[in-house]
Length: 335
Ligand code: A2P
Image 1: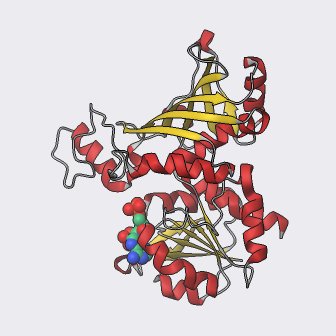
Image 2: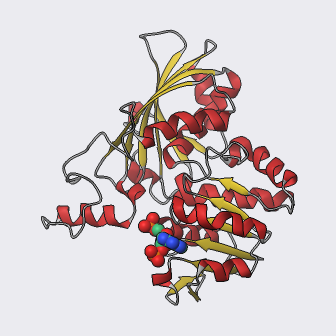
């Protein structure tokens, strides 16, 4: 089987190759694509050297899947030519997420939407969108509660790792840590010994594009437009993963013990909540792990049917590469 990784030289692309290898795809024919400036470069995969190719050349080889993490404009340009060639695209950018016919998938929650889209496509090849990293970890942590009680409203504040912004942001943080002036600024201000309430671009309503993603994508994945979401995104000088403080109002009364059990039993989630031992999820705990960690579970005494929790995941793994590859694995398992 041929599998393409578009954006293979990038931060997420590199983790995609790592996850593919870890999950037993080392013997498959993996095609790697990046921008024209990287064509011909060598990348190590499963103990062998792969040569970076132009995207057009990879399309011509008709891979079964193409997993994209090369930015929204690359996805807009190349996703349809891939599907026309019979390749199913799993796209990690924001390009296709809110297009109504494109499924937005966290496989533990709604792989059915992807299966249906493939069945309905002319040549069994379609585009499947991978949600935003902050959305993935939040909806996975909440998925069991949505099923059991229904969710009325979510108030979320994120503490996002610089890895979500790519290599340039890591270089900025590392240069600042060394006391040097960064060669290029990924952010409008220093990130070392600092944080700022800003991710993506500001919109007319004074929210940012990253905040809007948390609202819109949550409703689409849960297929429930009635869920109210209020989001604040902050960037923190952290590399291991994104953290989120989530306040969730449920539709029905709950027992905290049952909530704990539901989260502990959610596929892909780990309940890590032992305040008596000072154990709670942190970005370092989640780094290089595929699971979403949930802790600090407690009732919100300020209003009925409401809970607080702390949700942490490695944004490059479950927030991006792992989720995309799990979509592919689930599709392979049913075909
Ligand atoms: P390249 O390394 O050749 O620029 P990151 O998000 O870490 O910045 O990575 C972005 C990825 O997307 C890189 O692999 C980058 O390749 C790739 N990319 C950027 N522009 C294009 C393009 N026009 N066509 C294909 N890949 C692209």
